[in-house]
Image (cartoon, rainbow, N blue to C red; front, side, top):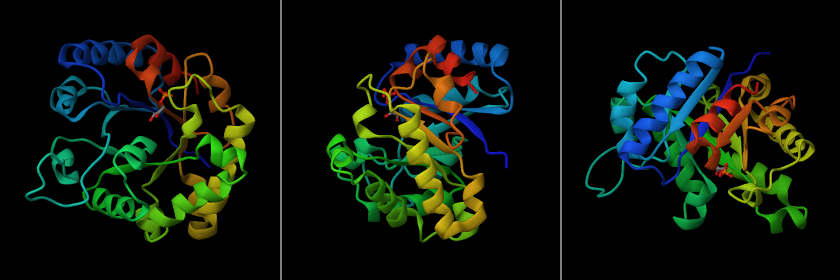
Length: 253
Ligand code: 13P
């Protein structure tokens, strides 16, 4: 079973225009020279970067763009929101949904995320659907149940055809931006639980689902994480803002 290997960079709310231009041009050069074309690289900058970024990536067959979020409505009077259809019209291919920062700071619920997943798929965007537990939830032994519940609530209504497009990102909240990475055992254990849970609903299709790990992924820990049988890549925050570091991650498969 071959699964897509994905190195996705989530810039979060960082990088001014000129910084973005420099970062993308460096990433393009490094990926071209060092990363096999079988690896999918996804850059998820803040929205205003997407237009020029697309032009800079025109001749890069394996570098794609993603939004960090999209609206739960198709279009209309929703000031400050960005619709999935608008992202698609800028030739964006992916969208991160359900990031823990969106769940926590913007109170995005499982129901809202189910709607966003639908609208992303209707507009031919590939959702990178995030799940993950807090430290307290892990310490009290609820982590498997909690993550499976997040998946059930926002994805289990999908048809098999819709589900087949989804990418999952497991991001333990205690590992995000903390420098504390999940051990390979912790990552593999959770990824296997996630795949089994998805298989319970979608059967064999779950074997083709790319499940990314996120949380303090760096150039020097990516190789061991990506070597885990159920870890199919990474969703990278801080390290995606440094071209050398991100390229090192992207070539760690
Ligand atoms: P860091 O890589 O900075 O820990 O962030 C992970 C993340 O939240 C990616 O979406």
